Amino acid sequence: MVANTIAINQQSTEFADRQQVWLFGYGSLIYKAGFPFIKRQPAFIRHYSRRFWQGSHDHRGTPENPGRVVTLIEEPGAVCMGMAYLISPSEFAQLDYREKNGYLRVKLHIYFQANDFVEGLVYIADADNSAFLGPASELDIARHIAKSQGPSGHNRDYLLALADAIRELQGDDPHVFAIEQHLISSLNDD
Image (cartoon, rainbow, N blue to C red):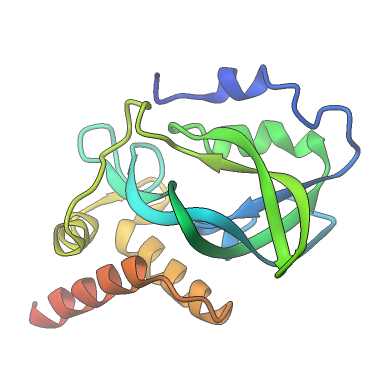
């Protein structure tokens, strides 16, 4: 699959008949919406883990030196904390552009409490997209992030803001926090 997914997402008719849709954010969408929303509240999804396995050619890196940003990887039993936004489907065009670097809209259950859920959507970049970088050690991911930057700024700023946002949600993400610690250690060594 190509990295630019705008056309693929715009062909989706999922939720087109609704006036409001819940959107789950697990990366920069937690702390930086950048689009109008009706309301927002902390939420979580089940059976997915957040991983810094997606390349960013357009925000936190360049085509020649992609940064690393998060995507979701299926993992039975996992829980991923994030932020849910109630939006109008008219926002899809802006979101499709923002998430164009390999992310596709996926329908899933968004939970607000243990058994209180709604059907909503999330953008996920799977291993089939050409921007997917895949797994690496958390130390190697931190080193990659430390040297990457793009039109939206330094890749490290994305990582640090995400880690802070997860803490504010009282979430736990060992993968993100380990990368953060490696990055901080490397910055202190400089």
